[in-house]
Image (tube, rainbow, N blue to C red; front, side, top):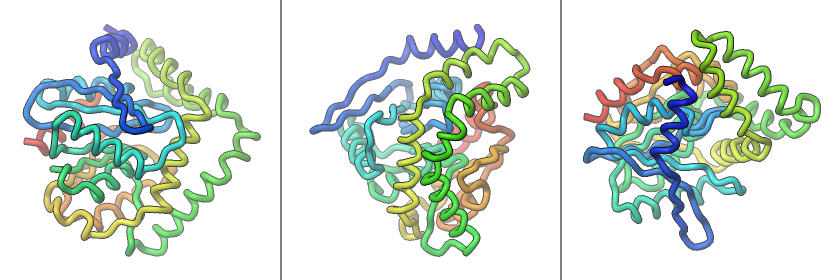
Length: 280
Protein backbone atom coordinates (compact mmCIF):
# COMPACT_ATOMS: atom_id res chain seq x y z
CA UNK A 1 0.00 0.00 0.00
CA UNK A 2 1.54 3.32 -1.02
CA UNK A 3 1.54 6.42 1.15
CA UNK A 4 -1.57 8.00 -0.37
CA UNK A 5 -3.61 4.78 -0.20
CA UNK A 6 -2.55 4.33 3.40
CA UNK A 7 -3.73 7.86 4.10
CA UNK A 8 -7.12 7.18 2.50
CA UNK A 9 -7.43 3.96 4.50
CA UNK A 10 -6.71 5.88 7.70
CA UNK A 11 -9.39 8.47 6.87
CA UNK A 12 -11.95 5.75 6.15
CA UNK A 13 -11.28 4.06 9.50
CA UNK A 14 -11.22 7.21 11.64
CA UNK A 15 -14.26 9.41 11.21
CA UNK A 16 -14.50 13.04 12.26
CA UNK A 17 -16.92 13.72 15.09
CA UNK A 18 -18.37 17.11 16.02
CA UNK A 19 -18.43 18.50 19.54
CA UNK A 20 -20.84 21.40 19.98
CA UNK A 21 -20.58 23.65 22.99
CA UNK A 22 -22.56 26.87 23.30
CA UNK A 23 -21.97 28.75 20.04
CA UNK A 24 -18.72 26.98 19.17
CA UNK A 25 -17.94 23.60 17.63
CA UNK A 26 -14.81 21.58 17.09
CA UNK A 27 -14.18 18.51 14.92
CA UNK A 28 -12.26 15.72 16.59
CA UNK A 29 -11.25 12.08 16.28
CA UNK A 30 -11.16 9.76 19.30
CA UNK A 31 -9.72 6.29 18.80
CA UNK A 32 -7.17 3.78 20.03
CA UNK A 33 -6.64 1.43 22.96
CA UNK A 34 -4.92 1.64 26.30
CA UNK A 35 -5.49 3.38 29.61
CA UNK A 36 -3.53 6.54 28.82
CA UNK A 37 -4.73 9.25 26.46
CA UNK A 38 -2.73 11.57 24.22
CA UNK A 39 -4.25 14.82 22.97
CA UNK A 40 -2.47 15.46 19.67
CA UNK A 41 -2.21 19.11 18.60
CA UNK A 42 -0.49 18.57 15.27
CA UNK A 43 -0.18 20.42 11.99
CA UNK A 44 2.83 22.07 10.46
CA UNK A 45 3.08 24.53 7.61
CA UNK A 46 0.65 23.21 4.98
CA UNK A 47 0.13 19.81 6.59
CA UNK A 48 -2.97 18.98 8.63
CA UNK A 49 -2.92 16.58 11.57
CA UNK A 50 -4.03 13.78 9.22
CA UNK A 51 -0.76 14.09 7.32
CA UNK A 52 0.89 12.36 10.26
CA UNK A 53 -1.41 9.34 10.08
CA UNK A 54 1.53 6.94 10.36
CA UNK A 55 2.46 8.52 13.70
CA UNK A 56 -1.14 8.23 14.89
CA UNK A 57 -1.46 4.63 13.72
CA UNK A 58 1.82 3.78 15.41
CA UNK A 59 0.43 4.94 18.76
CA UNK A 60 -3.20 3.85 18.65
CA UNK A 61 -2.57 0.26 19.75
CA UNK A 62 -1.08 1.50 23.06
CA UNK A 63 -2.95 4.74 23.77
CA UNK A 64 -6.25 6.46 23.27
CA UNK A 65 -5.72 9.26 20.76
CA UNK A 66 -7.57 12.56 20.36
CA UNK A 67 -6.89 14.74 17.34
CA UNK A 68 -8.66 17.95 16.44
CA UNK A 69 -9.32 19.97 13.33
CA UNK A 70 -8.51 23.63 13.87
CA UNK A 71 -11.65 25.72 13.35
CA UNK A 72 -11.86 27.47 9.98
CA UNK A 73 -13.36 30.61 11.50
CA UNK A 74 -11.22 33.12 13.34
CA UNK A 75 -10.68 31.84 16.87
CA UNK A 76 -8.32 32.57 19.75
CA UNK A 77 -6.06 30.25 21.71
CA UNK A 78 -8.16 30.97 24.80
CA UNK A 79 -11.30 29.82 22.99
CA UNK A 80 -9.60 26.61 21.77
CA UNK A 81 -8.30 25.89 25.29
CA UNK A 82 -11.86 26.19 26.63
CA UNK A 83 -13.21 23.94 23.88
CA UNK A 84 -10.54 21.33 24.60
CA UNK A 85 -11.31 21.47 28.32
CA UNK A 86 -15.02 20.91 27.62
CA UNK A 87 -14.25 18.18 25.08
CA UNK A 88 -12.16 16.20 27.58
CA UNK A 89 -14.98 16.54 30.11
CA UNK A 90 -17.47 15.32 27.51
CA UNK A 91 -15.26 12.30 26.68
CA UNK A 92 -14.60 11.65 30.38
CA UNK A 93 -10.84 11.45 29.88
CA UNK A 94 -8.30 13.24 32.07
CA UNK A 95 -5.59 13.83 32.85
CA UNK A 96 -4.02 13.45 29.42
CA UNK A 97 -0.64 13.72 27.80
CA UNK A 98 -0.56 16.63 25.36
CA UNK A 99 1.61 16.49 22.26
CA UNK A 100 2.04 19.77 20.39
CA UNK A 101 3.97 20.38 17.18
CA UNK A 102 4.76 23.67 15.46
CA UNK A 103 1.97 26.19 16.25
CA UNK A 104 0.16 23.31 17.99
CA UNK A 105 3.04 23.31 20.44
CA UNK A 106 2.21 26.87 21.44
CA UNK A 107 -1.39 25.85 21.99
CA UNK A 108 -0.19 22.88 24.06
CA UNK A 109 1.84 25.20 26.30
CA UNK A 110 -1.16 27.48 26.82
CA UNK A 111 -3.39 24.51 27.64
CA UNK A 112 -0.83 23.12 30.10
CA UNK A 113 -0.57 26.51 31.80
CA UNK A 114 -4.32 27.11 32.08
CA UNK A 115 -5.56 23.57 32.79
CA UNK A 116 -3.01 22.02 35.13
CA UNK A 117 -5.43 19.43 36.53
CA UNK A 118 -6.04 18.05 33.01
CA UNK A 119 -2.41 17.55 31.96
CA UNK A 120 -0.30 14.58 33.02
CA UNK A 121 2.62 15.22 30.69
CA UNK A 122 3.72 17.38 27.80
CA UNK A 123 5.53 16.50 24.56
CA UNK A 124 6.63 19.36 22.31
CA UNK A 125 8.18 19.13 18.86
CA UNK A 126 9.84 21.99 16.96
CA UNK A 127 7.67 24.67 18.45
CA UNK A 128 8.01 28.27 19.54
CA UNK A 129 7.42 30.09 22.79
CA UNK A 130 7.67 33.42 24.58
CA UNK A 131 9.01 33.53 28.12
CA UNK A 132 9.29 36.24 30.74
CA UNK A 133 13.07 36.13 31.12
CA UNK A 134 14.25 35.30 27.60
CA UNK A 135 17.48 36.88 26.39
CA UNK A 136 17.71 39.88 24.06
CA UNK A 137 18.34 37.73 20.97
CA UNK A 138 15.21 35.65 21.61
CA UNK A 139 13.16 38.80 22.16
CA UNK A 140 14.37 40.15 18.83
CA UNK A 141 13.34 36.91 17.12
CA UNK A 142 9.82 37.34 18.55
CA UNK A 143 9.71 40.85 17.11
CA UNK A 144 10.84 39.54 13.72
CA UNK A 145 8.20 36.80 13.71
CA UNK A 146 5.44 39.30 14.49
CA UNK A 147 6.72 41.66 11.80
CA UNK A 148 6.73 38.80 9.27
CA UNK A 149 3.12 37.98 10.11
CA UNK A 150 2.09 41.60 9.65
CA UNK A 151 3.89 41.76 6.30
CA UNK A 152 2.38 38.53 4.99
CA UNK A 153 -0.64 40.18 3.38
CA UNK A 154 1.59 42.45 1.30
CA UNK A 155 3.98 39.60 0.55
CA UNK A 156 1.17 37.51 -0.92
CA UNK A 157 0.57 40.27 -3.48
CA UNK A 158 4.11 39.73 -4.73
CA UNK A 159 4.40 35.99 -4.13
CA UNK A 160 0.98 34.27 -4.20
CA UNK A 161 0.36 31.18 -2.13
CA UNK A 162 0.31 28.91 -5.19
CA UNK A 163 3.96 29.79 -5.86
CA UNK A 164 4.87 28.82 -2.30
CA UNK A 165 3.03 25.53 -2.81
CA UNK A 166 4.92 24.81 -6.03
CA UNK A 167 8.25 25.54 -4.34
CA UNK A 168 7.38 23.30 -1.39
CA UNK A 169 6.38 20.43 -3.69
CA UNK A 170 9.66 20.76 -5.57
CA UNK A 171 11.53 20.63 -2.27
CA UNK A 172 9.61 17.51 -1.20
CA UNK A 173 10.23 15.76 -4.53
CA UNK A 174 13.97 16.19 -4.03
CA UNK A 175 13.94 14.22 -0.76
CA UNK A 176 11.50 11.45 -1.72
CA UNK A 177 12.95 8.03 -2.42
CA UNK A 178 9.67 6.65 -3.79
CA UNK A 179 8.31 9.25 -6.21
CA UNK A 180 4.83 7.70 -5.87
CA UNK A 181 4.68 9.23 -2.38
CA UNK A 182 4.33 12.70 -3.90
CA UNK A 183 0.61 12.00 -4.43
CA UNK A 184 -0.11 12.41 -0.72
CA UNK A 185 1.83 15.66 -0.45
CA UNK A 186 0.10 17.02 -3.55
CA UNK A 187 -3.27 16.25 -1.97
CA UNK A 188 -2.39 17.82 1.39
CA UNK A 189 -0.92 20.98 -0.12
CA UNK A 190 -3.78 21.45 -2.60
CA UNK A 191 -6.25 21.54 0.32
CA UNK A 192 -4.34 24.31 2.12
CA UNK A 193 -5.66 27.79 1.29
CA UNK A 194 -5.27 31.44 2.27
CA UNK A 195 -7.79 31.13 5.11
CA UNK A 196 -5.82 28.23 6.60
CA UNK A 197 -2.63 30.28 6.41
CA UNK A 198 -4.35 33.27 8.01
CA UNK A 199 -5.65 31.13 10.88
CA UNK A 200 -2.18 29.69 11.54
CA UNK A 201 -0.64 33.15 11.56
CA UNK A 202 -3.34 34.50 13.89
CA UNK A 203 -2.75 31.66 16.37
CA UNK A 204 1.01 32.31 16.35
CA UNK A 205 0.41 36.04 16.75
CA UNK A 206 -2.02 35.41 19.61
CA UNK A 207 0.54 33.21 21.35
CA UNK A 208 3.41 35.68 21.06
CA UNK A 209 1.36 38.72 22.07
CA UNK A 210 -0.92 37.36 24.79
CA UNK A 211 1.08 34.57 26.41
CA UNK A 212 4.31 34.84 28.36
CA UNK A 213 5.44 31.70 30.13
CA UNK A 214 7.53 31.29 33.26
CA UNK A 215 8.82 28.36 35.29
CA UNK A 216 5.92 28.51 37.76
CA UNK A 217 3.57 27.64 34.90
CA UNK A 218 5.18 24.23 34.42
CA UNK A 219 6.66 23.32 37.83
CA UNK A 220 3.89 20.79 38.31
CA UNK A 221 5.26 18.90 35.29
CA UNK A 222 8.68 18.30 36.87
CA UNK A 223 10.38 15.57 34.75
CA UNK A 224 7.14 15.15 32.77
CA UNK A 225 7.96 17.23 29.71
CA UNK A 226 9.81 15.97 26.64
CA UNK A 227 11.08 18.45 24.06
CA UNK A 228 11.80 16.91 20.66
CA UNK A 229 13.68 18.71 17.93
CA UNK A 230 14.99 17.69 14.53
CA UNK A 231 16.36 19.05 11.28
CA UNK A 232 13.57 21.49 10.49
CA UNK A 233 14.80 24.93 9.53
CA UNK A 234 11.86 26.61 11.21
CA UNK A 235 11.34 30.22 10.07
CA UNK A 236 9.43 30.95 13.27
CA UNK A 237 12.22 31.01 15.79
CA UNK A 238 14.14 27.80 15.16
CA UNK A 239 16.46 26.40 17.82
CA UNK A 240 16.79 29.74 19.63
CA UNK A 241 13.19 29.64 20.86
CA UNK A 242 13.43 25.91 21.58
CA UNK A 243 16.31 26.73 23.94
CA UNK A 244 14.18 29.44 25.58
CA UNK A 245 11.43 26.88 26.01
CA UNK A 246 13.76 24.35 27.65
CA UNK A 247 14.93 27.00 30.13
CA UNK A 248 11.41 27.65 31.41
CA UNK A 249 10.63 23.96 31.97
CA UNK A 250 11.48 21.95 35.10
CA UNK A 251 13.88 19.07 34.40
CA UNK A 252 12.68 18.43 30.84
CA UNK A 253 13.82 15.53 28.69
CA UNK A 254 15.50 16.86 25.54
CA UNK A 255 15.65 14.50 22.58
CA UNK A 256 17.04 15.04 19.09
CA UNK A 257 15.46 12.93 16.36
CA UNK A 258 16.72 12.37 12.83
CA UNK A 259 13.64 13.87 11.22
CA UNK A 260 11.98 16.91 9.71
CA UNK A 261 8.33 17.63 8.92
CA UNK A 262 8.62 15.75 5.60
CA UNK A 263 10.28 12.60 6.92
CA UNK A 264 7.87 12.48 9.88
CA UNK A 265 5.07 11.94 7.38
CA UNK A 266 7.03 9.16 5.67
CA UNK A 267 8.55 7.39 8.66
CA UNK A 268 7.76 8.53 12.21
CA UNK A 269 9.18 5.37 13.83
CA UNK A 270 11.85 7.22 15.83
CA UNK A 271 9.31 9.66 17.27
CA UNK A 272 6.95 6.80 18.10
CA UNK A 273 9.77 5.05 19.98
CA UNK A 274 10.63 8.22 21.94
CA UNK A 275 6.96 8.81 22.86
CA UNK A 276 6.49 5.24 24.07
CA UNK A 277 9.65 5.46 26.17
CA UNK A 278 8.37 8.69 27.70
CA UNK A 279 4.79 7.55 28.34
CA UNK A 280 5.33 4.22 30.08
